[in-house]
Length: 85
Image (cartoon, rainbow, N blue to C red; front, side, top):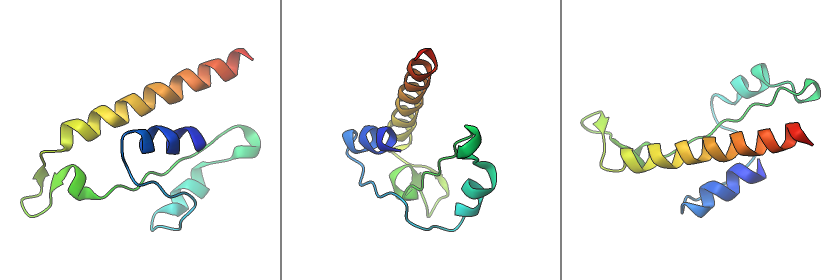
C-alpha cells in the first residue's frame, strides 16, 4: 500500500488510504492477506480521464493510463524482488 501511495503521489495525485468507499466489499471478498492474496482498490476522480458529460475519454486519459501502467510495473518489480528474498 505504501508503494502504491508513494508512486501515485509522485505523479501528483492526492492519495488517501483506508477510507471506506462503495465497492470496498470486493477488496474484502477477494483479498486474503493471511494466505498471501492481497487486494487493492483504487478510486479515481473520473474527471481526470473522462469527459463525464459526453461519457468519452477525456484529455487526461492517456496520462492516467501511462501512470497506471507505470504503477503496475513498479508493483511487478517489487513483487519480483520480494519473491527472490
